[in-house]
Length: 115
Length: 436
Picture (cartoon, rainbow over the protein chains, first blue to last red):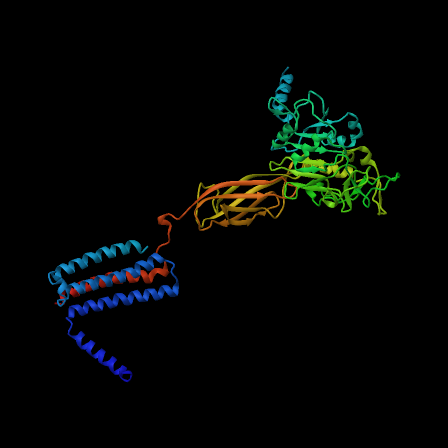
């Protein structure tokens, strides 16, 4: 068993990629968007660790805007995913409208807190 | 006629100045009541009284049991200072008693007490009220078998030549008193916990307090340099008291007598008594060591008006003028140890004030990053000087909402991230809607 770990990992990756290729492109776009937000948040945390936490409100609003965006995008992805049976009664248009409204509120708050 | 009228108006307008007495502007005492056991003291101690008179004091001599004496009339004090040269008085005449003397001192007036052997309980009580305790043995005197003054008659060594003076220019003057001070009388002790009492003339380590006529059966209660011969007290209201255990040390005989300390070959033509007691009387009657502070000012750096409030991390200037009374005029007080506290329950800023040698003390500092109600405090207490205690309250407020810095360079990455999220949201919306 211990001998074949790298092979197993490769097999795991292969199956993951082949499964992901089957994902609809609209969901892939959402994933990309989430990755972008998380990556920006990580950059800011590293910058804060280097420079110091002085304009702390700015740091918080910068990071929370990224995290909030990512969370809202994940919520949208759950709701528009056709394979997800839980939200099959919810039309994707309604989910998208919710997403836009929440984003507007989020960015309004962020602008006020950015200082 | 016109000339006469002019004189009248001039006299009336000068009246407030003629009726000069103890006041904050002129702190030196003027009217002194001297209470004596008998009027012989007036002539036997005339050198001391003359030196006071020549410095402008109005002395009023009364017998201590005179029924007409009083310190007050119609609620006003008649005198600025009281001299008790009446060691044996059992009861004062008139309205004077221990309580009225304590009130006299409590209202800022000065007192000289001279006790002597067989001092009465009344004088002991007044001294105890002032913070010194005379030896309880009524017949005791201070005896020193090594530090006595050499005299023709081989005495009992109760005439002491003491040179253990306090080292303080403000109390004893800047001139060094070289000749020993003659003393014959009773000793007292001061409570070491009492910071207001100072030993000015201490007995030598070899002295003790006992009855010279009888054999010493038990160890004396007071020994060594714990015995104080002359002490001074400066109360918190700057009233000053001198307590001496000897009336004869003020006498002409002691002032004029030569002195030679036992074991020492130098013989002085004149004892140090006159110089010592004259300088001490200058101090006790506020001719020296009296400070006043005025013109406390503070303002922001670059402004001249005093604000009603400061903001945190404002830069401010503080200045105060301190003068010392020289007996005739207010002279600039020059020192380098006046400190200012910016105080809110504890000093947040403690700065030594710098002086321009003309009485003006100033400093500048930054208000700490704490808001609340602060005080500018100057607490100046130095040996022999009257204490200065100034405080001025000032509130300190935090930044107003529009006084914070904006668009800090350090925060640009955060701004950028927030705006890129908004742009990203917009692009994502478009892509999401049109990618079907």
